[in-house]
Image (cartoon, rainbow, N blue to C red):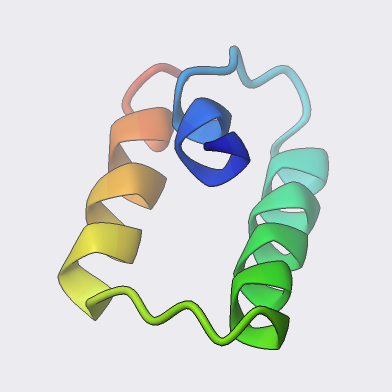
Length: 51
């Protein structure tokens, strides 16, 4: 899934990362896919730990 792959990408530009993360969340909402907030935050923070 593209959303989870985002967590595995190397972050060189933090602004671009936030933008991609936001776009991914919006796409999930448009598809009516519901994830627990804890899942979203785990993916987000695991990617930030790679900085």
